[in-house]
Each structure stands twice: as structure tokens, then as C-alpha cells.
Image (cartoon, rainbow, N blue to C red; front, side, top):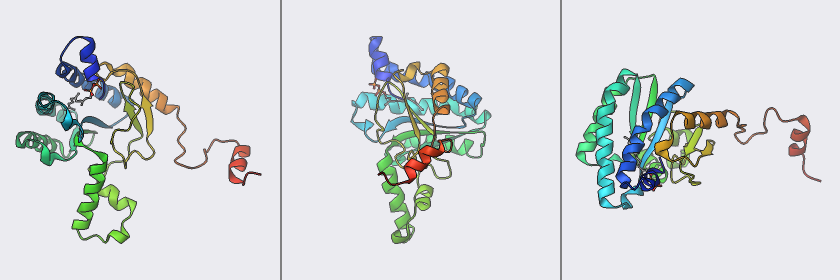
Length: 235
Ligand code: FPP
């Protein structure tokens, strides 16, 4: 959800005002996703690296997470949305952990959509913690396979993301869903997150619909001659 700070700076507002505007941007994006048939959405709200921001900004963000989860849970529940917080929650305040657990508990059996909120999330940490958990369960690590790791991640049971949208022109993956994004399509837009509304998400989805996804294979629609060339040693 990049660009909140820049959005605020352009308006001579404190960065926290940008984060508040960032919260307001969520609902139209979720609604547009729902209309487009996208029923799993992950918001990267706070990374394991974001603790290095000024203390007052971190505190304001934590406050915002608690307030937003609390104020939105009933409506999300009424709409059949399951809320999941992914990330290392042990570092969150007990109060926030309680709110998170409550929201997850209320919405646990919903099946219309899934909203993952990544808080204190880091892809590397997620993979390490999955492997530690498997080792602690007594799994023979010599027998480890990809399916076992996938099932031990925070996103267990969910399909891998098809599309990753990066706002504010950032061209990095930034430790986001490292394992799960192996074949995700990346879409980068200069639009700042608080300005990223229905039009922007529809543009991203349209761009995605035009991508040819090969998953490492030869494209199905490729002309026979191309397949021939790829299949035979050069020269
Ligand atoms: C990155 O923009 C944004 C964040 C670190 C915080 C995003 C969090 C929210 C919008 C709150 C969401 C709340 C819930 C419950 C999902 P930045 O500050 O790095 O902006 P910049 O790149 O312009 O400086």
C-alpha cells in the first residue's frame, strides 16, 4: 500500500494523514474486486522492516490497524468475508492481538471472500517459521516437499496469488509473499495507494487479463514453428 507518505507530503499533511487516506482507499478496491470476481485479496499493511520507521508513526499505524479492524469487522462479516491476519503477531500489542483474534473468530466460517491483512509480515520470516514448525512437529526434513511448506505458511489452504499490484511506482517485491508469488503476474502503477480506487484496480485487472501465463512452459497458443525452435538445440 505504497505512496501514503507521498500523498500526504503533496498536501503538506503529516504522514499519518496519508495512512488514514490509505485506509479509506480499501473499501472501493474491495468492492471493485468483488464485482470483478476476485474473492481473495491481501493487503500488505506493515512489513517486518516497518518497525524501523519513527516510533510515533509505528504507534499511529498500530492504532489504525486496531481501529480499522474493529470498525469494519461487522460489515465484512455481513458480507461473508473471512478476515485473516498474516504475519508474526507475537510482536503486536496484546490489545491488537485480541482484536485480530476476535475479528478472525467472528468471520472464520465465512466463505464469500477472504481478506488477508499482512501485519508484521515478511516472506523470509514466514518461510523460516514454516520450516521450524514442521521440524517441531517431527517432520523428517529430508522428506520435505513444496506441498508441506505451502501448508505450513500463513496462507495455508489459499491458492497462490495470480496478480501482485505495486502502487507508487515501486519496482521491488519487498519481502512480500516470496514463496506464494513464484508465478504471480506483477503490475506496477505510479498511482499512490490513497488514490488507487475502482478505476485503478480495474485497469490492473484488465492488464492482467491480457497477460500470457506460461508457468515455465511453452505458451499454448504459440505457433508450431516457435515450439519447434524452442524444442531443438540451436544450430
Ligand atoms: C506504505 O506507504 C504504507 C504503510 C507502511 C502503511 C499502510 C497501512 C495502511 C494504509 C493501513 C491499512 C489498515 C488495514 C487494517 C489494512 P509509505 O508510508 O511508505 O508511503 P511513501 O512510500 O510515499 O513514503
